[in-house]
Amino acid sequence: MTSIHSEETRLRDEIVEVGKSLFDRCFTFGSTGNISARLSTGEMLMTPTNASMGSLDPGRLSKFTAEGVHVSGDKPTKEAFLHQCMYCARESSSAVVHLHSTHAVAVSILDGLDPDDVLPPLTAYYVMRVGRLPMAPYFPPGDTALAEAVRDRARDSHAVLLANHGPVIAGKTLKEAQYAMEELEETAKLFLMLRGERLRPLSTHQAEALRSP
Ligand SMILES: O=C(CO)COP(=O)(O)O
Ligand SMILES: [Zn+2]
Image (cartoon, rainbow, N blue to C red):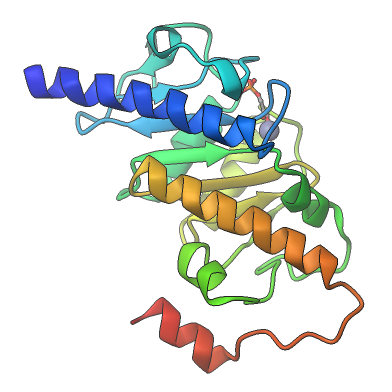
């Protein structure tokens, strides 16, 4: 009981800390984005709807049963179903982060990219932290069809880009999801900086060596 309680307290504090860190460094803005974490009991904590990631209150986070029923806290993010679909597709994940990080959003608007893997393997850390990045077609925020489109893609990739919207990433821990999100945003920035240049991304062999060390 005590350890479950302390796990929940720790995760509540971590969601607030990660949200503030991402917001303060302009990885998302206004009331965009949402964060969740899954306890060892299967219960989930999520950020409330219309909350700024920069000023979350640990005591007001929305809490869900393992079955996905909202039981306490403020009205949950409208992407609650999206987070639940990520956990469903990725059983080993305990955290999900969704942001409107500017460069990743910009990439999600570009036409003509490979929807099965949107960005080339520009650097080792991109391959190590993100790997593949499939794109889910556009649906309005909070649409359950969006969550379902993401679930299909999340079975093979912990990171998915929502067309004309932004990225969503699951991690074994919240830190893992955060670091992957930061790596994705910086790689999207590099990709945009280098558009029109001749690129020399990692070879398939180099990328594979990083995926399976
Ligand atoms: O990013 C968002 C929607 O896609 C933010 O929505 P919420 O404020 O409901 O979490
Ligand atoms: Zn969003």
